[in-house]
Length: 381
Image 1: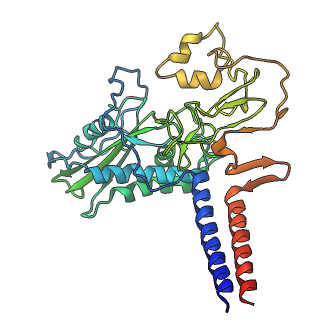
Image 2: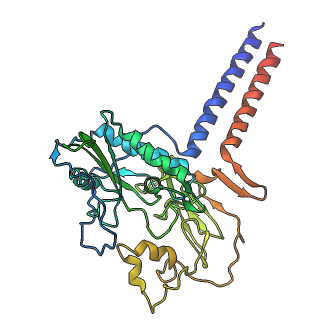
Image 3: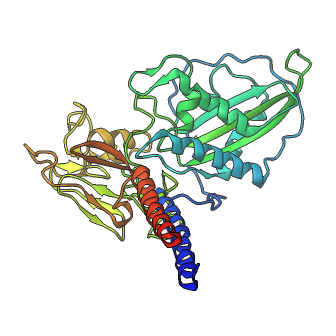
């Protein structure tokens, strides 16, 4: 083989490797994935506990574990594992509004108050404020892995149907994947009792903020990742809304998709909706969804209520002045507008249905490799 042909073969192989690397980077760019350690929230003040009207029945308390061992402190490594496990499970839901969770020391302190009581509740700890969510687990075993407990909570997904709701116990799963929950704090405690079989019982509890909603709302919305983040900006990391972002950069990929003649601001990663539409992606009609959105019942003050404000904004967007009502608006009068980071979205709605974007990237990769290998083959002939 001549020197010229050998050189051509080398160049062709380099092109093949280059295509593989470029396609791999492209895939992860659109997914917004990397191995960076998830951010934590070391100390964010949460609302103080205030007296609330609680109509929940008193829980049944199993034997009080009178003798207590010293509370086991959760290490920084375990905190990261807890947050990472929650976020990994949440990213699997195919949700458009799933928030990325961060650790909160304040919620962890509240969870510690629950586990150090050494009481087993059938359902919940009534001392936890209603606007907090809580998952509690007790086991009588020498082996204890927190991520496996979180997995058990998540496995209740088999008892949940997105369209019809729970068929059996699934409240732990719903809290794990509740889209708007951004903060989590957990605690672990070993309790000793003279009552069998509760000797050396191990308690693990996680508190969440905000809590799951008890008004029948679905835990998350389905759709392109981060396209309907509740904060209004579609900053994304690993298919989860990153509320800590203020501009594009590491862990901050803009995935905004704006519908119904809306415009997008790439710098803020927000959609500006046309009259008659609202929502993060402007896909929701600007109209009241409840008869209670009426001055005879409530006024705009309800929109900022600490407990019911989220309900009001979701069901009364006109009253809350989130959008401008316009009659007889038609959907899809304009094609969707994509932010630069969402130019090739995970799901593309079109005349032919939905197309899965990674398949396109894979086909591009294969085409490039085949082209390079063809050049190499011809060079060897």
